[in-house]
Image 1 (cartoon, rainbow, N blue to C red):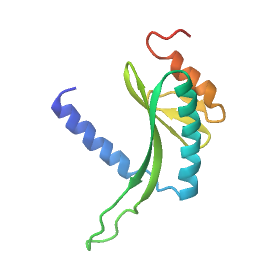
Image 2 (cartoon, helix red, strand yellow; image 1 turned 90 degrees about the horizontal axis):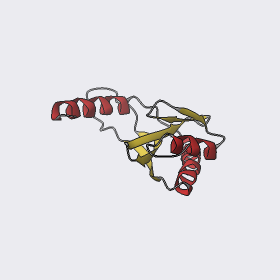
Image 3 (cartoon, rainbow, N blue to C red; image 1 turned 180 degrees about the vertical axis):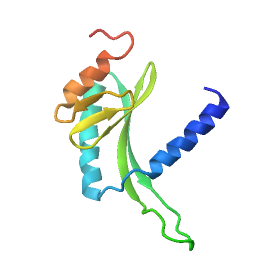
Length: 123
């Protein structure tokens, strides 16, 4: 990826991040726990990952109403030989940046699916 692509991607990432809904503390905590379950299952398979809580902070100004600040979707950054994949959850499903989805009710099966899609892994 060249510098122009990186700059464009960074801009679009910031725009998308600004559109994420603000979550209540309870909902953010619930999603963090579900992602922590997936993290534990992935760690058991030897896959490194880091759980990140996200908080959008909007600077206030006198030019009119601003978007609210607050907790947004937590993310599980999963490190694979192909690069980093990010998992989020709405409480019902784990959603991966690869486009795959898995039921959040079974983190062990979701981890197995992620593990089986890694290069060099044996399904």
